[in-house]
Length: 136
Length: 239
Image (cartoon, rainbow over all chains, first blue to last red; front, side, top):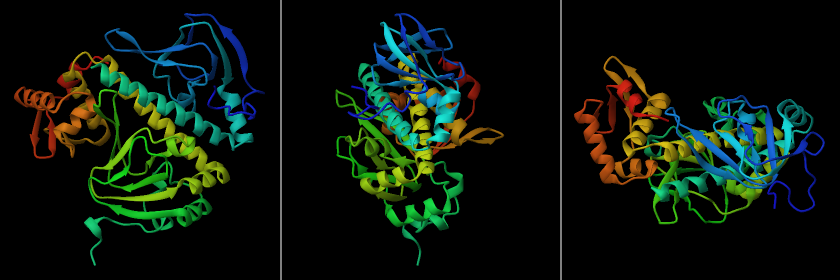
């Protein structure tokens, strides 16, 4: 169940997103790259991989359907803080950053949707932190 | 009559002298006026529990002054500090917006002024004010970014010493005062709380800090930490 699409609520990005199927093992965006837009994960799973200066790379989070990847980076206009790679085949909706910004100017109420999405993302982060702390 | 805890209390947001410096609070006069009509100002001593993990969301707390720790419990009951909240932050926003139980607990670390807004009033405020929504979303982005940084530290650090060195370096960047002898920090956290931030035990933190003092990387006098060799601490961090 997508948590940004409660029953009966229209997808606010429907008119501006490009939905595509991605095979497993594809890089959606790389750590350090500037944000090109946001990626709505409709199906499949995506690994979020973090890198150390030593070259060590680890998957520290996994995104599941309903999550919007790169949203925080797009809102902050800051480089991606991790690499996103499809673990399985996935159906992903891409919204270019310019289109997102224009949509927000035309429909400021969309900021509430973004606040909901970011709230859910934050909860996912905290859940990951609990798991990592328990593993130590 | 002196104010409680000698805090510089702002009873109205309109009169707040630092409002325009804060991401969430820097809003139009009409939004400020609305916020003044729906908030309840309170002064809280150190150690006040604002909300508890798992509790149904009653509303949000805007931290006007002071600091608070946000904690969560792992499945093994280990307490982890996910963030130290600074003035200007809106606590409990994600739970309030989603209508789900608070995912963290919030406790003041020092005497603090907080403005509480009931859930229904906050949601109505957001629905009617795109500007406030935008500021809320922007602040949530910052919190997400901060959480991702902590995930990186928890997941990639090879040793607990590295995590502690990274934490001290982060403090230097955020709050450090450069002096001729090194970077001066005011650290109000106990060793137990530092342990909760990096997922280890108090005994390990005490031992590591003693080791850093012995190696003259830091000097500690009460709550003041002087970072003498920032370069060596940076060398310890691989992430």
